Image 1: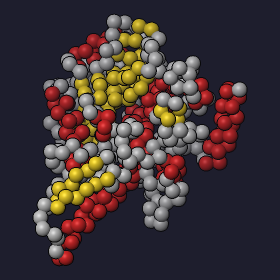
Image 2: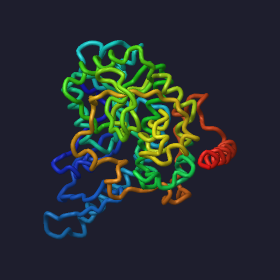
Image 3: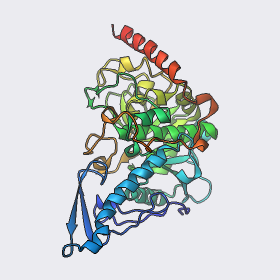
Image 4: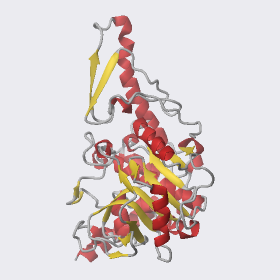
Length: 409
């Protein structure tokens, strides 16, 4: 059962067109584009990808030229709604949460919350402008008879100015530049949205004292017999000290050790498609102000586990560890119980495969007149995790930079 709140419309007949054809209270759009066939190439319409309008009728008369302006209005509406979503952070409001219930009775996977069982606390981070992905999420949850809360994700496409990050109180790790050799690109607006979306879930865990949560991204694909195997694997991890459990992952280095038949201590690991986070980890992420030194989230997790210090995969791990504290005690399921579905990488808003990717460093510095973000006062963070004053932050930046240079030399 899907509770009311987020109507889903649109025709997914074309994998790109479905990104355009949606509406409801979040976007105020209709699902039809009369007399026009929109073929979108290389990205989302209005996000940098090239769009081609193919006419299906004789040339449009002057009295009908209003229809030519509809795609442009659609582009403007998408941008407007993406920016409105940025204003609602870090606290999650009811309008950005949707409860989906399919389990027969209370949801429990295995050993109980004290041992990391997420129980009812399953969160799916999903962009509102990706209706075809959200449809797939609903099908997966129904097929596996699971309850979950779908979280309306922070949309990096709404980040138009460097000042937007200051307005939200977030920042990229100083000196990130073009990342590292295996991820050789500047920080993208999509990576900003990804990090902030996950942070919002961590914030909710702390605010509502949630013992453990399973956090999924909307490209997840449950593997066979997911629920039963999740309980079995969690039972194997009882007695071990962990606060992060990879349910799905892409290992970049050999595992450090084998904990049990289906649980390992991982080395440097990519993907945040599915993981269980315990409350002490969520608290630590907020208390150490993870949002003040953002890097790609999967790299952040690996460095927070103390992985990669030999530089085998990421030659900057040691440098970045001077900013990112070793607060995570990670384990991983082997084999994984969640994987990205086939082809999802081509629609990823953080992957390098997405044409039209925008880098934060290339954005205009100052917001245009009337474009500055105005944060929703209902979404102010917890009192003890609000961003520190700008002057303090700048002083700390100088100290951290000196420490980083000392470590390298």
